Amino acid sequence: MKSTWQQHWYEYDYSWNPKGPHKAVDGLFSDRSPYTGQCTVSGHYKRTATWGVDLEKVLNIHHITIYYRTDNLPWDSTNGFTARFLGFSLFISNTTNKNDGYLCFKDTNYTRGTIPNNITIECIRHGRYVIFYNERLAGVTYPEGYSPYAYNDLCEVEVYGCPSSVIYGANCSVSCPKNCHEGRCNIEDGTCVGCVAGHKGSRCEQLCDSGKFGLNCDQSCGFCLRKEQCHHLNGTCLNGCDRGYQGDNCTQVCPEGQYGYNCLDMCNINCREWKRCDRKTGQCYNGCQAGWKEMRCDKKCDRGTFGLNCAQSCGVCLDREHCHHINGTCLNGCDRGYQGDTCTQECPDGHFGHNCQENCSSCPFLKTCDAISGQCSGTVEEMGAKERRSKRIVQYNCQ
Image (cartoon, rainbow, N blue to C red; front, top):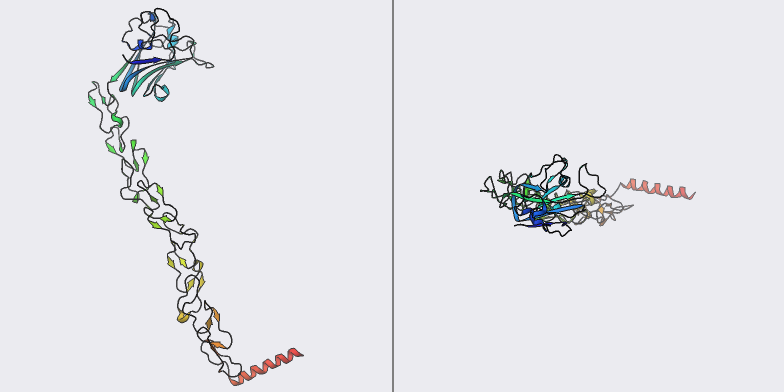
């Protein structure tokens, strides 16, 4: 005999009191009254009534038949126990809590004249506990004919199915498909009740695909290389990760400072924001530091330019060499006619040549010459005229 329980016991200690919920699974129900001890009797004036049986292991259940108390009177609208039976629910669960289980049936339509006794409820389900429940809650309006209080006056509850959760068929002689979750399948047609990790299909005969993996193929693959299918069992990306991701399942984004396939590349130190770049492309955030260009700031400024965004032009370096790509300095000095670190300053009067290091001292009169070639400026007459013009300007200013 299976272990049973009920929420409320009958309160009065009469000699005919059956004293126990186990009377509903003892195989005896020829007398549908409590007087010979073949039926349970629940407590009076209760708002809820619960009865359950432990099948001792998870079984492959097909249907359940309930024989309710009649007191051996005709089962029709004149029988008072029909009112107690109305509104009942039946659950199959893997715990003793009905709320953890599956609701097989809930009466919402029967009346005292239509509710059958010896009612059979099909409930194709796997479970260990069968739970009968009824309620008459305070403040709730129930249909006409319902009893004012809840009862579980059961004479017998019979559970039909296969004695194991991993077999099925009319004679319970066929094993469930091998990839069914926990080996369980539908008792009638053998379709799996869920699949083991990595499989899908009614009989779990197919591997996961379309970017899915795991139990019932309900988990999504990460960002595998070239969007390849991940491993159907554990989701690992067999050929590594696509740009911007890392980890066995390629679900972790690259940490700051890294990018590319499997995050193996480092952001360039020449990024304007120190080693910060797009985790997929390596493009530097907010551009490059002075002297660098391109998306990843991995190329120096083109010849003749330097500085931030390579927007500045080099001066006149020696032999037109390229200036320093960062600060524009001419590493080998200036070409003829220019001076300064960046060779952008023209020679002052009286100087010429490379870096303006030579002077025009050999030139007559004003000692001026061409800043590049050193050729003295003007003829003797021109110098004289220039000197006379200067004197007139001085005299004019003195008047």
